[in-house]
Image (cartoon, protein in one colour):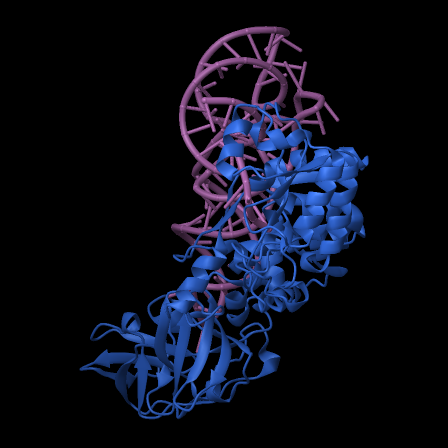
Length: 463
RNA sequence: GCUCCGAUAGUGUAGUCCGGCCAAUCAUAUUGCCCUCUCGAGGCAAUGACCGGGGUUCGAAUCCCCGUCGGAGCACCA
């Protein structure tokens, strides 16, 4: 099987579907898969030189290593050879019709005057195309299919055209005669030995077009499945490489790994495991109708993977300060993980005041249980330690909330898909290593990204 | 206009090829309860679907026809 991306940028979440499915099938059925960069349009779908490696990185993140990597722009000579063979078989002709004129003829099922050229002429004109003797738009090579085919999309389609713009890859920059996807991909699939193809419904007619070439060469066409488009809920940003690139350009997004970007690099930075994405994608199946992937499915998969190994911490967003009274303990020692007491406890100095999230502030006179510390009663904007037993919580009389010491807590910027949130975390968070995952209790999971001079930066994973 | 394709709960999916085992599976979601010093995890329960209409048949999610809705192609893009 093959994954044939157009290298025009890092992958968005939807791109994960192809490697997820074919990679999983390979592992399950002892198969084989390659990545083939179909970069045969130096102009309208101009490749981005950084994208080749970026895509391979994304693939690695998802947990797959391709069995081989090909680049179409390295293989022009191969396509030329097959085109020449096709010409000798009478299966292709050079055509200088302007696009719109040919389109009119085609739509009425009429052949253009070039269709009956003799092989000798076609051979010479195609050689001239390869030599770059024509400019863009002057000459194409068409595959001779069936000009009266009931589906107009299949009639004598273009196999090669002239492109004036040099290819960005230096190795391919001298070529001017470029194959179209249907020709290039059709030839490669056979030569590489692809037995099963999965592709989008937008390429529904590709197989039908390519079969004409396969018939000329007497090749057997691979099994092919077409699937619909994937939409991901939870993102405002349109999931298109070019749109994301524009937003980055305009400064709306910080980069491909901005937590608001619907990209794999973004999910990676948020601490989501590739496996969680792969499983969700495989779960979508290969239906031809369009599907919506709920990010909650990815989150549920990821939570399953990381919950057990992730230690707990406190983070208070938009904290309100409350002085403490009544001689509470000087230190709180909540466990690192409630299901793993053997991992030990955090030692949080309490100080003389704490921060609470605004929604957790008890009404005057009401009690609240500061998790890992004890019970307090709010009066006159202060919290007085009551010394109540945990039994009051079990009875349901008192809510349990998280908190941080007002002075010894550390500032944290939590970057979320909905924007950045400022907060303060318990002191130990300042010592965590970059890349470590934490669960901010009652807030959600997060990945520690780095410690700046002024603050610790964490990326929000999911609830 | 011509040509393809599809339609099962909020979302995804199984079942459709070879009609009965489907008063329709599983996951996610939502809600409630239990447990818990998290709104996490775990346990239990509830909610919720075969696009519509005909036909074939003893019997239709499954086969046929019509309709509706949705998607795709008809590029010198991939």
